[in-house]
Image (cartoon, rainbow, N blue to C red; front, side, top):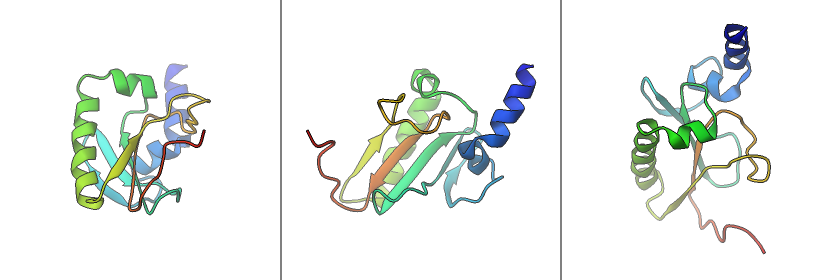
Length: 120
């Protein structure tokens, strides 16, 4: 049963599909563990996603002692290159955090002044 659930998840998750090139995407970097590609949203001129190739939750990513530092280092390198005037790294958790994809990911936003985090 778990194999069936894994198969369905891997074939229906848009982040899995782009990371494994089953769906189109502009990939900026990839290795065996991570895919980095453009986000289709347009909140900022530059929106990049850092996605583990293994389908996992946000909590699992942030607790992974090997994968999270690797993504963090890569995010800083790509952020400095693509957004020399500054950028924001963002990770959403749960409904109130506006997490819309169950697959773990980190956002890089930049290309303009991003303003305050929220309007109070």
